Amino acid sequence: EAGVTQFPSHSVIEKGQTVTLRCDPISGHDNLYWYRRVMGKEIKFLLHFVKESKQDESGMPNNRFLAERTGGTYSTLKVQPAELEDSGVYFCASSQVVWADTEAFFGQGTRLTVV
Amino acid sequence: AQSVTQLGSHVSVSEGALVLLRCNYSSSVPPYLFWYVQYPNQGLQLLLKYTSAATLVKGINGFEAEFKKSETSFHLTKPSAHMSDAAEYFCAVAGEAGTALIFGKGTTLSVSS
Image 1: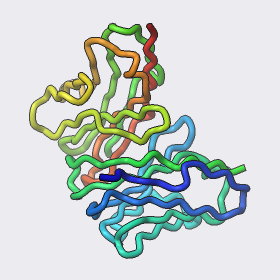
Image 2 (image 1 turned 180 degrees about the vertical axis):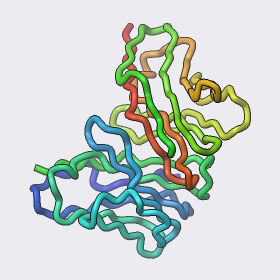
Image 3 (image 1 turned 60 degrees about the horizontal axis):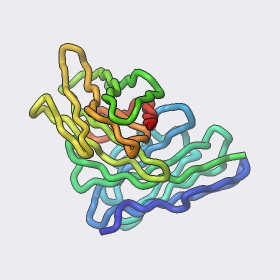
Image 4 (image 1 turned 45 degrees about the horizontal axis):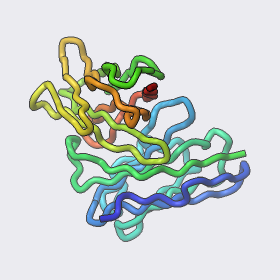
């Protein structure tokens, strides 16, 4: 069974450009999470989807970030326009059920560098 | 509010030595606690989790952690380090809503021969 897959693995873009990150969760997992790790800092929660609905987007830093999960399958996270402080590793995770004691499976992350 | 503090951003041990990675938490509700590991060029992998059952939790690869409420700690240990244990380790607590994880800053473990 495939794990959580993220595309691309690395992205280098210039300030002001747009970047779209993609996450394919484990098949059948209704819950999908986005996290971000800025260099030297902790991994921080961005948002949580249950199927195609945003359950919690309290961690989204600002309105330059737009997450979608059309059809409740894969998800995209678009940053437009990108700023230098958006650089970091973006992780996606999925889980079968929402409860806190359920294991969330993580992807390898997308390393975003904004120059 | 929930929070996690990992003491020591970098820990170095010799192969065969005890591994001790420290984690303290703050939680307004009975906590769910986790340890994740990230090997180079891989995603985060769950090592073990505490969900209010036994206070001593055994995980994969010989790791275990003990939940101590009085000390608000959830330290990760392994009796004998292997070279393959070199990785970054993250302690996390489930948020108040019970869904999103709140992570510590991570501890990089180096193992020397």
